[in-house]
Length: 140
Image (tube, rainbow, N blue to C red; front, side):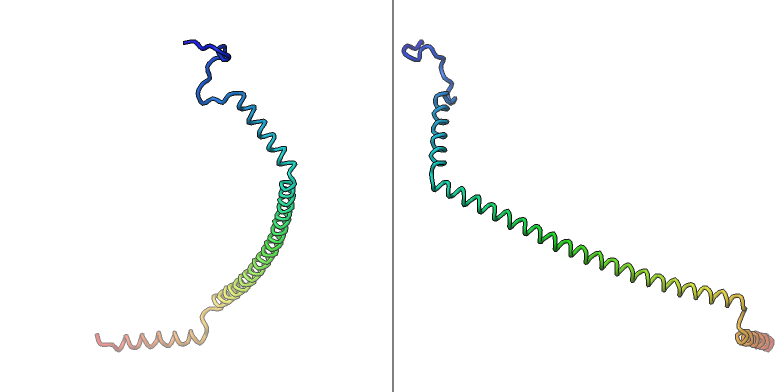
């Protein structure tokens, strides 16, 4: 079946595909709407108010970031100082413990060199004699 009339020479359109004329028409309508909006005083006022509000929010955000960084820096400084104090205290404790251990070792060395104390030696000698005598007197 052939068509006759003004559109007879063109190929048939696919269903759902927009025609070129309708695309051009939509573009022209959008351009006219944009022109109308740009010339509208109310639209211009809204754009200006929005721009001012966005700039104010940006400034508030920057101030917030700056104050947050200041607080973070101060907190970090306090933490470093606290850790340094704890480290110094721990070093002092370790030094004192090392000195105590060194004195104990030195005292032990001196005791080992000097032998048994005389008083202890006499007591042990008398106990040894007493155990020999009791061993001799025990019934067999």
